[in-house]
Length: 170
Figure 1 (cartoon, one colour):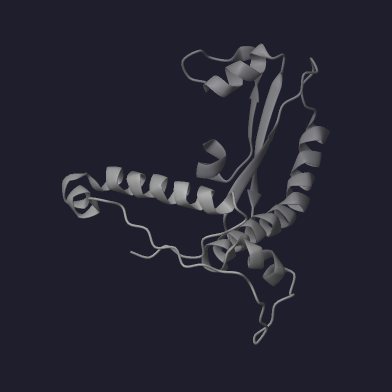
Figure 2 (tube, rainbow, N blue to C red):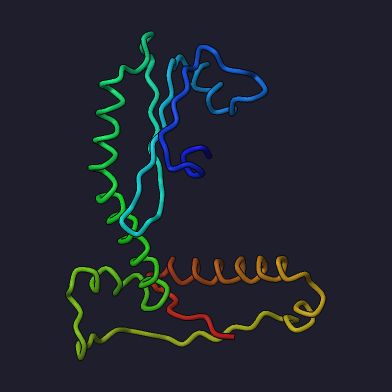
């Protein structure tokens, strides 16, 4: 939390933890034999903030040189991790709009405007019996959970047979 709020590294020696003040994670690390804890920000070019953490089991903990090296490593890792995160987000969006079968091909540049591909396809119409009454009686969060569960089961049935659902409408 400190790293997110202050965009600064956070270090805590684990031998002197306070039961009330320090987070449970630090107590767990100490119980596993760790002696020091260091968390530092990974600032992405977009301004997004992530972090990396490390903890040693050596009795001496980290040296100042260790901390300098971790900061250098964080600066090297941030652009790579940002690229990985952006790729995952892009694939997720492509999966949602064009389906997983074609999204990876798009990312590799294998699909261009005007390209076509012949596939076997089906239109599947299904109805959730009593949905209007449910939508009028259930709280919104329960209704959304019901729909998500229903769609998840539909998608699982299609995927088990090599299919994919490109769009839910309704």
